[in-house]
Length: 124
Image 1 (tube, rainbow, N blue to C red):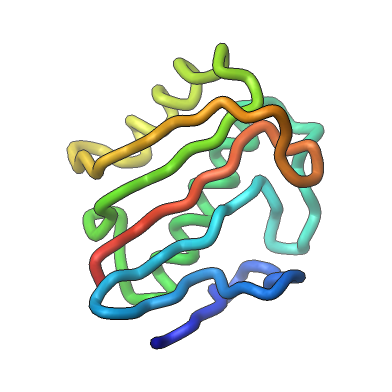
Image 2: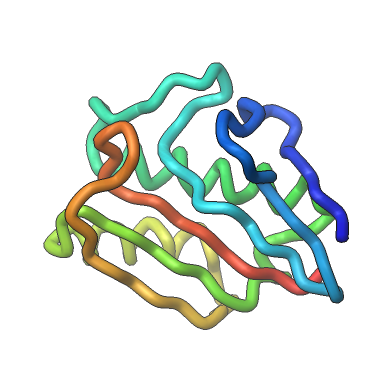
């Protein structure tokens, strides 16, 4: 088992790693809209939060020597399911033609009052 914390992201404050690789699979911990200085961007628009979350996923992938093309599953949590179309538009530009499996869940709340969180699984 290999555990990696992404360069450029704030080290985890809890008992987890940004990425854990085992058996040829990389598990990317849930990414919130937190900038490289550790500041939650919860006052930004939903779109701004989504873009930061996806940038954080990119940083996690890069830290493991992976790309978006290695993603096999993406899980998305939003606090307002009405924001789904906005998320899907930004995600579509980000992911391009690659189509990993995906799940979306509307949740009551996320840490720091975030509007979106994304976790993922990739081949390593």
